[in-house]
Structure formats: C-alpha cells, structure tokens
Figure 1 (cartoon, rainbow, N blue to C red):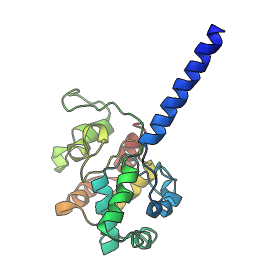
Figure 2 (figure 1 turned 90 degrees about the horizontal axis):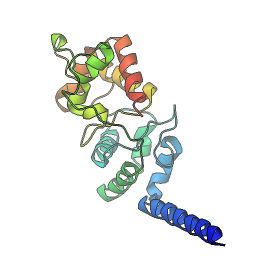
Figure 3 (figure 1 turned 90 degrees about the vertical axis):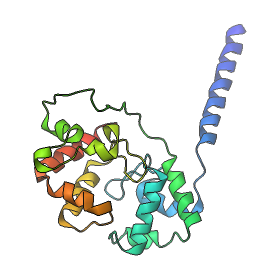
Length: 205
C-alpha cells in the first residue's frame, strides 16, 4: 500500500512539473499562427520552408519583420507575410512568443579557452582570419554563436538556411546589416568555407 501511495505521489509531482513547464511557455498570439505554418508552432523551423525562430532574440525578430515590411530585406514569401503584422505591439507579441520558445542547451566556448585550432572552420568561427580582415563569427554572434540583441543565434540553425543567407549577403541580395558588415564578411568567404561554417553551427545543438 505504501508503494502504491509513493507511486501516486510521484505521478502527481510529475503532472505538476509538466503543468508548470507548460504554464511557463507563453500562449501563441493569434497573429503568430500564420508564422507557425512555415516556422513551426514553437518556432523550431520547418526545413526547407522556414528557419528556426526559437532562440533568436525578440529584438532581432522584430527588426527583421520591419526590414521585410520596408522592402529592405527581400523574400517573396516573407514580405507579404510580414505585412499581416501591423503595429509595434503586434510585432512585439509575435517576436516575444517565438523568442521565448525552448532551444537545445549549448555550452558556450568562451574566447581564450582555446588558442590553437587545427580545424580551419573552428579557427574562422573563433578567431577569424585577419589576413583577410575577417573577424571571428563569435565576435558578433556571441560565444558558440548563441546570439543576442540584434545578432541572431546561429547555434542549431538549419545549415541550408545559414548557407543561403551567407550567399545572399555575398551577392548583395540581402540588405539591412549595419555598415554593410555582413556583406563584407560574406565576400571574404569561399563556397567551401560557407558550407563548412553553416554545417558547424547547425550541429552545435
């Protein structure tokens, strides 16, 4: 009888913890439902339809929505979708919802933890290549590409999306970065480096 009571108590605690976790997740605002059709209801991404939004900062998501609305950032699908979100309050609600969704934990590798990199991709990610005036990816995107503020999280993002965006910065079809910073970076990379960097960050899960 005691074991049955303990088991029942354990199930109750489990149910309570699940309920608490569910309550901690914000409810999807109605305006975000359309976004979820391509990016997933929790913003985990639906390849190849839409990249992962979970883990991106609310500030970054809001900024990108406004760039699509202004036509500064071009995408045949996203531009009309962004126009359905009218007003800063609505944009903020959608951005806050996706930003709050859970993402896989990644232990950040802090600058200085490792000085010598045998792998050329890791060297680009953590040290850059100053012979090409190329800063490390983590200089802006944070330790292990975890992002923050106006810089997106790269860790765990779809490799195909990272690759596509780097090529878009490279050929000038994507705009909206401060002082043309990403365009400069992308133009220093060759196709093999773009593939390798995209794969590296995608697998940081």
